[in-house]
Length: 122
Image (cartoon, rainbow, N blue to C red):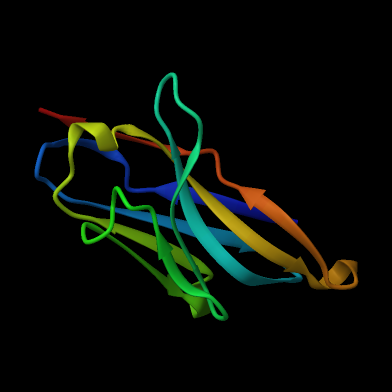
């Protein structure tokens, strides 16, 4: 019923910037919170940033001051603006949604995008 599609990943030099976007599509849902996770080779998936109407924004310590998350509720889209990128930011970035399914009696569920690759060269 809901799909999350990421875009904006790519190859960038150290110190560069990227803007990631994630659009939720479908019908009969509302979004409670959205966020970004990342997973580097050989490492566990970790939370990068999240945003919700009740809890505000939250960032991993490693990206505070460099990454900024925002939402466009009218477009059901979440963004991650990344500045001052470092090689250690290289990972697959996944969009996450905490979503209420209105057509299923307001049942809440987690949805994930397929991921977009971010590679930062030194």
